Picture (spheres, rainbow, N blue to C red):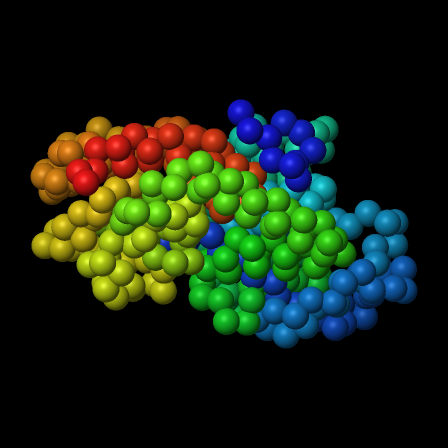
Length: 346
């Protein structure tokens, strides 16, 4: 398996899970800590980060160890890619305690550390639990960008949210990496992680020049409908970065969530690209394959569709949007895309 150069080792509701492949942002904490506390500062400033809700000053930790609570989607994996082990992880994709709340592709990077795993829930965050951890920094970069949530977290510790113009759960993976790197005082490391990952993507695209001649879509079966990914959803962004162009009728469809569109049964032919990457959310692979509308599509009948099994790591890696998960996708998906592309009639 390909090991990325920058690694040292080895939704809450359905609509959010479908749409949010990757959201990254950085948001700023309050200038003053609650009750006049300086948050354990040794007097210096580790970082100053601009984000959607202002500017966050991150003090130098008194003991030299930055205690980070990672709440945003894949924020913990990004921190790990930069050499920082969060003390708590919000387990957005339900990876579980055994994986420390991150994808199995990143779990070993915790080493002997045992972070608190905060299970995914439709309820609001447990602020008392977070406050009891006494963090130096809260990462909520890839999130819903709820200002009330940000304000409450900022009362606990300096908090970093998303880029100023980012939509909910849509920071862009490069932005997410760089904002988190800046907040951790590791800006140069962040630039290197982004550069190395972009180089790896470009190398795969160069290995498959045929992709640049074809159209593609990424879509899902979930709930009572179907979903189509757009720019801002890592699942499409990676396909595009590998050289594919978005299928015309898909590109003309108006997104509902900025980077995701609900597709009715009447419009399921929006998936009729040269190549389609399809995956189920809340269903099995067999459910997807047995879906009468999906199975009736030419792209499926001609074996030009890559159907992903929700039980394989690739599906969750496709959604996680971290540097480590992108490597999993680059290792496992291109050959399947090439097989599908080989069935496109010239």
